[in-house]
Length: 404
Image 1 (spheres, rainbow, N blue to C red):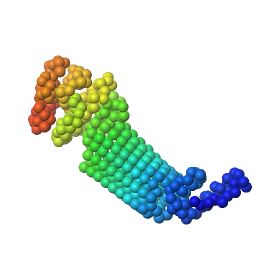
Image 2: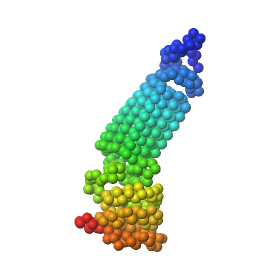
Image 3: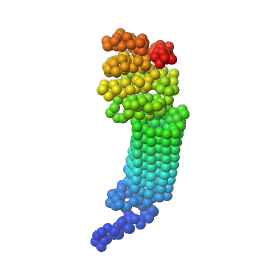
Image 4: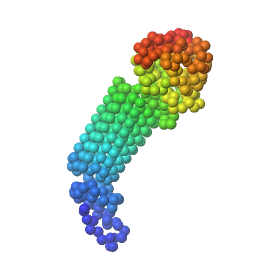
């Protein structure tokens, strides 16, 4: 380890210590780093006030796992192929550094400056990138699954082809970025601001988008299925379109129906009951015919608030599909909808194992906007005749109720 060679007795204030350490050359710091992570971390612990300066160093393929590089000037450093797993890079300046192919899994890069940094193909799974600044950063093909990018600033960065599954981008500010063909499944985009960003071909399935704000997005070929628009702790409401998602969020938060594109409103279908993965074929069938299913996880709550939410969503639906096979909360939901909403058809579905509708449903069958129950033996059977047995009757009834 490098010796400080300072007489503490003649300098009790420690000013000379700080001055000499600040003047330590880049080469001396590199020599210390090459002694190993243990020696480097011990020195950092003894002199936490010193900001390491390693700019322009060649650290290609080095093993710096668990190294404390927090607050360091690492601009223009070549870290390509380096092992930086669990390293502390919080607050570090990594401007124009080369981290292509580097392993940064579990690393802490919170608050790091990544201006023009090359992270092409880097491994960043479970890394902490909260409050980091990505300006013209290259993350093409990088693996960021499970990483934390909350409150980060992303401007003109390239995330094309990156893996962001389960990533946390809550409250991130994203502008003019490239997310083409990026995998964002199960990512958290709650309260994020996303402006003039290219998401063509991206996969957004089952993203959490509560409170998201978007403008000028390119979404051609993007998969926008089952986007969750509610926050943690609330019954999950999922929709298939960002525009619809933002509209419904405003609707539920204000309880007022804002202006809405009639073409889209004629495609919204509320799906109730049987909240299982088995219902996916029904959703896929609706999507096949260009409808936008709105799905509520009715198993999470049977509260009054949920009933009011469902009633509000029913008002903007073309028609309602209600699977009565496993009723549980559905009687309460239908009781709030059917008697009070004469312009929206209700198409009941029932598996033959149920033998008959639940007792209270007989009272609803007298309403002319409640269609005849469609019985099915299996979802495969239901899907095969879905258009003729479900969609066509529901559409005909919707037109009749609207005077069309």
